[in-house]
Image 1 (cartoon, rainbow, N blue to C red):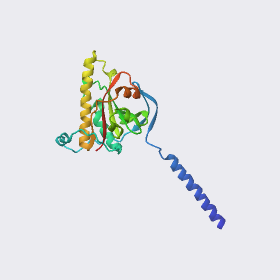
Image 2: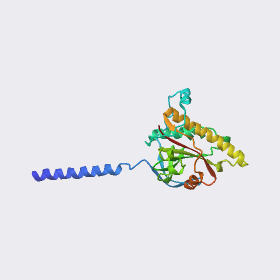
Image 3: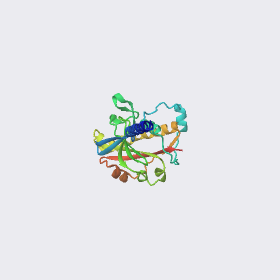
Image 4: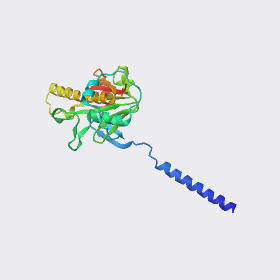
Length: 234
């Protein structure tokens, strides 16, 4: 009888171990989606980090948001929650009419010429509004190359707005093209300011950035890094 009991106990241990191993094997390692070299223009993307659905229902009245809008140059190093980052990026350059692929900001002749890059400790990403995801462009922390201003290396997120001139072929001279690219950049920058005001975050619009270093890192050819916004908790 004792041998039978021991045999049953041993079988239960084996079955339990198998179930535990099965659960361990089925557990997802992370929520990243590896892709096989997707190319967007000049940019190669190796994997996507899906973002949570943006929480667009901020309750702050517009008058209060405008009243509290300000420039902040001191940031906490604390990471932004992914939900907050998703909402920030949607307000920056997301689709508010996805069925028409129309964005929250206007652009000249609807050319939608901007690419939005997100610099974090983990890597540099291209925001994909259609996928609601971040496409990895460069692995590693490259925040400090954006500018010599030290707060870029401290803020957990920096948004760099790059005008992609390949989408602006309808403008026949550079002066007209640059005028509209600058105008459209202003719309995006203001949206970042307003979201940060509503979400109690700090930000500053910076034109004093190392455009050559940014272009070399990201690898785009026909374009220009126009502005950068470090964003973080105050």
